[in-house]
Length: 211
Image (cartoon, rainbow, N blue to C red; front, side):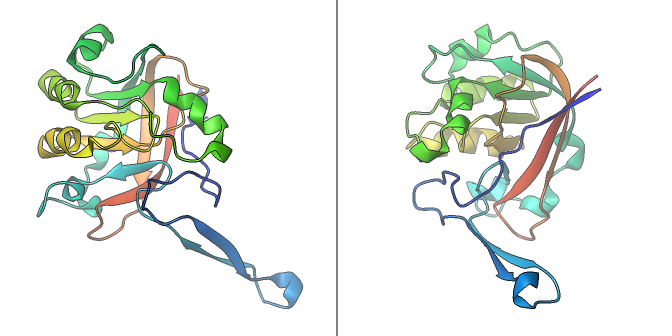
């Protein structure tokens, strides 16, 4: 059994969505300064790093993070490699992706994955995302979970159509996964978001297990 940690390490250096809070992670009590224990504080947006989107993120009145189905967040998942030449994932790209019949969870590995090796470059607006037609195709396939290797499932400045299609269909969305070390194939996914009451998103620790 091999375990792949597909979670991005959260530090103040990590890129965040434009307009979202930057990460603050600092030691506020230190043993070397006489404190009883080391204690740190953290400040960041809920859509930082590897995270899930709850339906209420784009659908007013819909369910929030603590209601997300754990049986969907764990189980078999297919990692699909999208060619580097692809600028966005639409219906045509979904048809060509080789998603296996009966698959209910898919993680898309794109040329976004290389961006996690260059955090100093900041947020990259030209990342690969899924457009509305691609989202509609995933719903028709019957997926229950979809993830991608950058901070949004949808292309930059085209967030709403894709998110609305997926979240209204009850699909779980995972964003910001790190698939650099993962080859295409079938794995077992464990993705556990922080249980934030009423929140539209939450950071998570996600792993893949290769049997």
